[in-house]
Image (tube, rainbow, N blue to C red; front, side, top):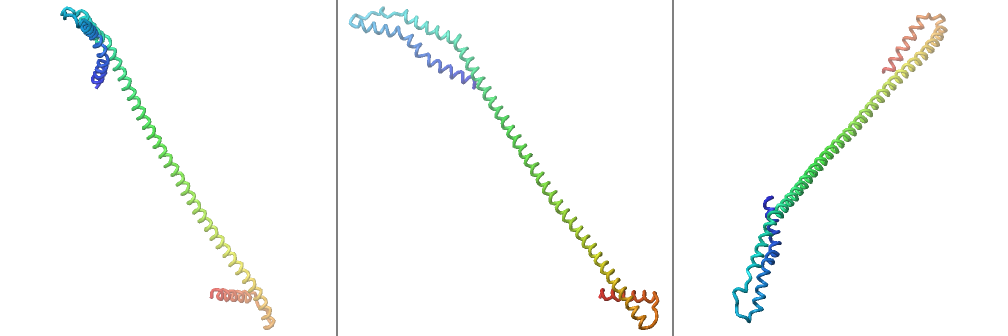
Length: 209
């Protein structure tokens, strides 16, 4: 590939220089033709053609080719090689920069996806903790309410039983006094206790029914 590029460049340079060199070589021939045309009326003279200028032009043409081949072509080839090497390095640098940019973009996208996943996980964990805390608070509130209801129910039942017992005790005392007056005798404390217990038993039986 490199040799083909240099060959094409050399051919282009040769094509650009060839017309000038040919013009230099053809100048003596043109002058000879003009002189021949000017002496057309005179008899033709074979010695009128001058060989020396023609040979000088050929020598000059060969000398120019030698100088080009000796000095110009190596420098031209070296310049082409340096230019090609510079272009190759620029292409390699551009490709390396493109690969680095692609790698950086992939790393950025990977880090962004990881950050999004972590943020979503944090949101999910916070939501789950909030739901668990709300459920725990509801359960604790329900438990406390049940305990309050049970305690209130027990206190109400105890107060009711105490009130009923007090009422029956007073009723029993009153009934004992009335019965003592009717029977004209004192009722002993045991009898009074028995009457109270019987009354309470009847009250519980009536409440259960």
